[in-house]
Image (cartoon, rainbow, N blue to C red; front, side, top):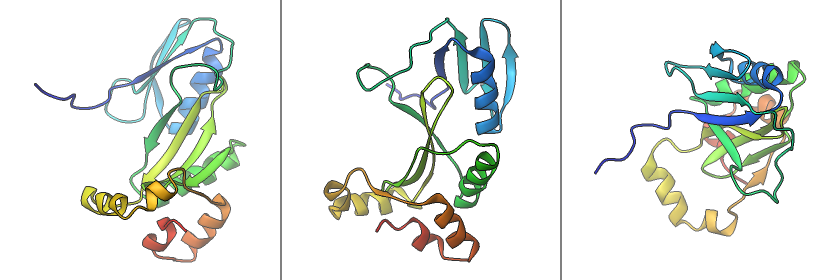
Length: 171
């Protein structure tokens, strides 16, 4: 038996296809590979679509009372990429509702026009072995949610030349 090679895409139902398409293209610096009145395929890499939006007319926003998808996360290669995205989105009036260093990741959570949650993150550990060692330390079990951070403060620290290891170390 074999595991999947990759996660191909996420599909979201929407009643606001144009707004959702624009938001995901802007946030992910992506592009539309196909769109009509019923659906849109969006990508930001070599996959034909990473996010698909289907116009179902749905208008009810997700809440914690609903079962189903909690959020979708996208990982950036570097902290510079994540912070550059934060600055770009902030300039466009798109702000995270939560910024947290979970330990394994440094993450910023955003809400799309339909109320779905999108996590933009970086991995804080260079190797799986380093992460496993950190998990075994008990730090995650003691605080599995993480420590909130000020994104503008993190930008200032990054721009001042603070070492990556210090930037992603959870307090």
